[in-house]
Amino acid sequence: MKKIGAMLTSLVLLASVLAACGSNNADNSGASPGAATPSAGKGGEPIELQILSLKQEQSSQDAFKQIIDNFQKENSNITVDIQTMNADQLKTTLRARSAANEMPDLITWMKEVEPDTLLDLSGESFLSNLNSDSVAAANAIYDNKVYAMPIDNGYIGFYYNKTVLADNGLEVPKTLSEMKTVVEALKAKGIPAFATGAKDLSVAYMPLISLFSETVFGQNPNWSQERDEGKISIATDPNWKLAFDLHKDYVYGYSDVGNAYNISYDDANAMIAQGKAAFYGNGPWALSGIREVGPTADIGLMAFPISENPDDSKLLVFPDTSLSISKDSKNIEAAKKFLAYMASQEAGTIWSEKVKVSSTVNGVNVDYDPIAADINAYISSGKFTPYGDRVLRSVFTDKLWEDFSKYMLDQTDWEKLSADLDAFWDKAKDIENTAGK
Image (cartoon, rainbow, N blue to C red; front, side, top):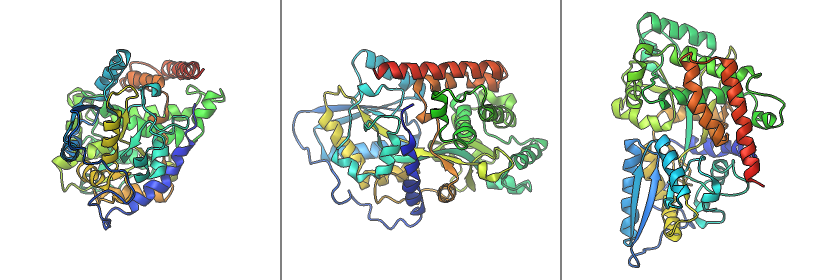
C-alpha cells in the first residue's frame, strides 16, 4: 500500500479552517495575493471544456453554474460543459471513455481512475492558493504526484436531530450501551432511530464507511500496512466484524426496515430534517439537502459510539471534492485556467457558501452551518481519523460496495464475506504491484 501518512497533516488544515468558521472576517472578494488567476482570455479559438461530475446535489450544481458563469465571462472563448451523474454511472463512463481514449477534459476526482490517465499538477502556481496539507492529503494514495486538486474538506459521521432526542427525554449517546438505550426507547415509540434506506444503496453504504474508519483505522492507523505485510487479516480482526455488525444491527436494524426499499437519498435527508428519524449516517454532500427541507432544524454531527469508552469514537475527516485534468485532454491550458479560477477566493467562497462545506482555499472562512462547531470539537480534541475508503485500493472498495448489503440483509455470513474481502485485498495489491513494474 502506498504511503498515506500524509493525511494526518490534515489536522492542522482542518482545525484552522473550521476554527475560523463563524468569524468570516476575511476579504473573500477575489483571489489571494500571489495566486494564479485566469487572464482575460477574451478572443482566440473557441474551446469547449468537458467536465464529468459526481456532485449531484442541487447546491453543488448551483455552485458550479455560478462559478462557470463567472469563468466564462472572463474567458469568452471558453465554454464549459458539465455533465453530472451518480458515482456508479461516472465510474462506468470514465472506464469506457478511458478505454476508448475519449476522456473528458476534467473530472471530479475518483480514485477508481488510473493515475496514468491523469495530468500531474505538481508545481502548478494555482496550488499555492490552497492549503498545502489539504493538497498532500488528497493525493496521499499516489507516490509524490499531484493528480487531484481539492476544493473542500469533508467528513462522514452521523447527523442527529436534537429535537427528536429532547422531545423523547433522551441524550446524545456517548457509549454503545447508551446508544442501545436510545434506539430501544425510540423503537418503543414507533420512531425509526436511523434514516437508512436501500432504494439508493449509497444511503446505507455511507455509514458503513464511517464505522470501519472508526473501528479499524481509528484504532490502528497502520492497519493497511500491516495487512499488506500479512500480519493481520480482515477475517481475524474483530474490529472489521464490529463495523459490519454495528451497521447491520443498529444503522439498518433500527431503521424503517419494512419500508427500506422505498427510502431514497432525498427521503433520508428529509427524514432527519423533519424529525422522522433521530440519526443519519452521511457526509457533507447531504447537508444541503437536509437544510433545503429543514433550514432551521436543530441538527448536530457525531461519531458513532463503538464501545464503552467515549474516546474510541472518532469522526472521519478528509479532503473531499477534488478536480483532475485528463492527461490526453486537447485543452490542457484552458483546463488549468479553470482550475486556477477554482483555486481563487471568489470561487472558493461561492462553493463554500452554496455547498455548505469548509474550503481548502486560503482565506475562505464561511460560517456555513452550526455543525462546523461539532466537527471542530472532534478535530481539536484529536478524536478524528483521516483514513476511510478513499485510501483503499479501488478493486477492494469495489468489492465492499458490491457485497456490503448482503451482510446487512443476512444474505451471507461473516466467514464468507471476510474471506472474499481478504481475497480482493490481495488481488488489489497484486494489481498495483504489477502496474508498478
